[in-house]
Image 1 (cartoon, rainbow, N blue to C red):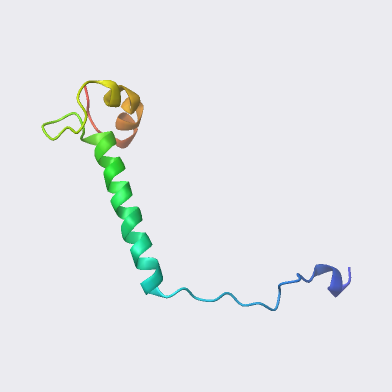
Image 2: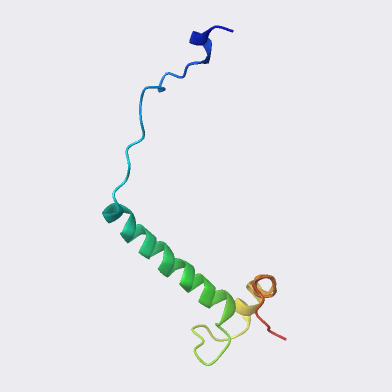
Length: 72
């Protein structure tokens, strides 16, 4: 096999590092979204419940057990 057949057309391009200032806001946003999802899956049937009724609980029931939250 010749060397020309193996080379990539972008082999000479080096990746540019992304500054922390550009990553930090997205990391904070992702953390807030993940904490909100964790709340909805694990804690939303208690005293601080956002939604009334059992619909949310039944929708995420198996996920609660998978994450180790008791619900019975």
